[in-house]
Length: 207
Image 1 (cartoon, rainbow, N blue to C red):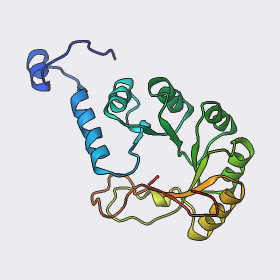
Image 2: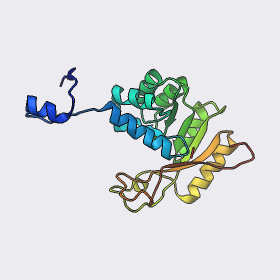
Image 3: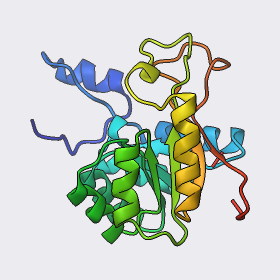
Image 4: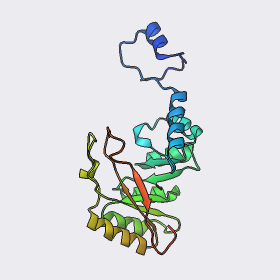
């Protein structure tokens, strides 16, 4: 399917003139940037965009122009996309399962933030990722009501395992932190928030 190069004043104008038989996707740069700025203005920490939700170049370029400086990437493709379109942005490689060649790819692209929920995945990171300035977030299970799908049932460490993982992360010299997933399509914003919280240790330790 090709992309139209014509710029229409609004969707209604297009539909009236073209009367398409198939679904049409409209992209409004001003709306995307306004939404990004609304998040930035209303949240005191780093606002991070999940690239997999829409990896289109136009979307990433507009979010970067609006001031988004953090991107949650789940694959080498997404990492390369952000490094090309927003080279100075922070990349959080929060897919909790990665092949060794994917970890090597991330290291080569300067990724400094990862997440884990198992000892086997942490062992791979410790063996392959340089310590200096690197954050490893332990993703723990958090039962969250008010979501269409509870991601805590798919990923995440138990409380006991999370404690062990945090200790191992700190002992290896990385910056330890905690994270959880609020679930897909939360209907109640007070029930869960995606958090990456620094864990105090003897070292100086995203909300």
